[in-house]
Length: 214
Image 1: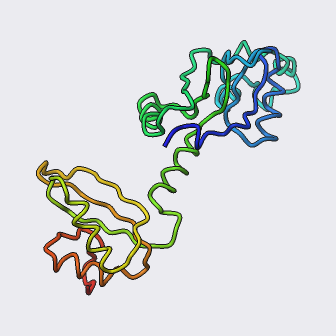
Image 2 (image 1 turned 90 degrees about the horizontal axis):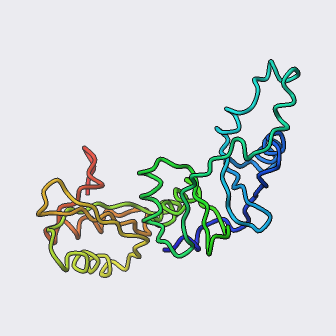
């Protein structure tokens, strides 16, 4: 999946000469936490977060005496060392950058011009969709040997039961000789499927609750 498929293309922006007060109003009205700052040609020059605005704003109890501070231009507060992405970047790679750099959003540029923005919420929503967690169903975790062809063998069991698979994730086991398959399936009662998997010699890690009868 590429960034272009999940980014918000209707980006709220401001100009460097716009005021701090205007930024506060826009964030409140649009219920957003980040505002890219662009010049008249649409070229990204900086970005503001709700934290930047909070740090720059006078305390509420001093607002009356320091009202003039809200008229200061955004170019005085915005961050200019902005981490950006491209519409054709892979979502997985962008997610890694979010985690490593501890950022909350990323402007997406093409030829230097702002085309969209992606946030932590966008990535989380995408992850939920990819895993199928937003759809009714069950999750099954199976420990298998770390060798080629295991996914095909496992899914053959699902096919015999005519159970559709919503998503598949693979992650390493502590023992490098094994890996864990996490399958989201479109059934609310996976009991029969689990019985078939165990009868075929597979180690089902979940569901495996104490006292649960399979």
